[in-house]
Image 1 (spheres, rainbow, N blue to C red):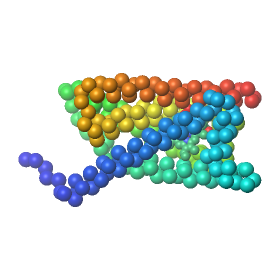
Image 2: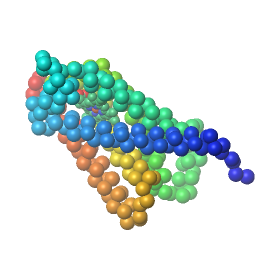
Image 3: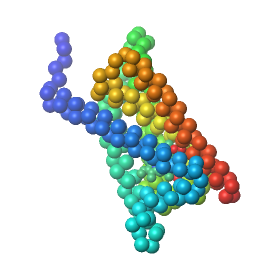
Image 4: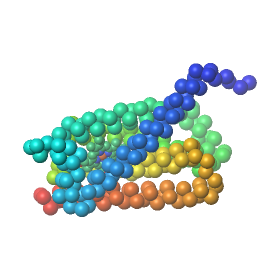
Length: 227
Ligand code: HEM
């Protein structure tokens, strides 16, 4: 006998699905703009100083100091979006060992690349759940330290590189795969277009991870030159 789902529950589920897609799309967009802003260090310390000062709206401050609190507020908005996205996603995760075993059994019987991709999303999502709050907490609490000197000291002297390396890998894979799944879910995609999207997904993952790694290396070099 088929289980009946109440109309209220299915309306709620559809809204949660939409919230997950919207918050995920916004976060991916934020992440890629953020990656470009942070990568300004590749053009030298002055370029990153310029970006950091503009993020703090220094051009509105007659004293030219800027308002680091603006960055804290942005961080809080991002934190709310992350919490919303995680809450909407958590409802679909296997809730206990029995459900995990059932999923693994099913994947063994019917190997499906899309299901495998979803399992990767669960794993990278969990890594983000552990690592991202630490980064956001630092950005919200010490926005005035963002800049070539402060960021380089945090990454190298305070050894935050060990947080950023796994965070970078997990977040870029999660975002690219997430956007690919959004396109597959909300757009009608032909098999040829899907093959093209899969290639684009790999290319973008490599590109974003490459830019992130190059930026981290530039910060490390800058910190070592300053010491
Ligand atoms: C308003 C919120 C945020 C601000 C102001 C911010 C700012 C920064 C800055 C300045 C760095 C350079 C290192 C440092 O100074 O510690 C950095 C690195 C990084 N951030 Fe954020 N971030 C924010 C949110 C996020 C979010 C939501 C994610 C992931 C979804 C993220 C992922 C990363 C990663 C992976 C790095 C490693 C460096 C790289 O990209 O090469 N950040 N962030």
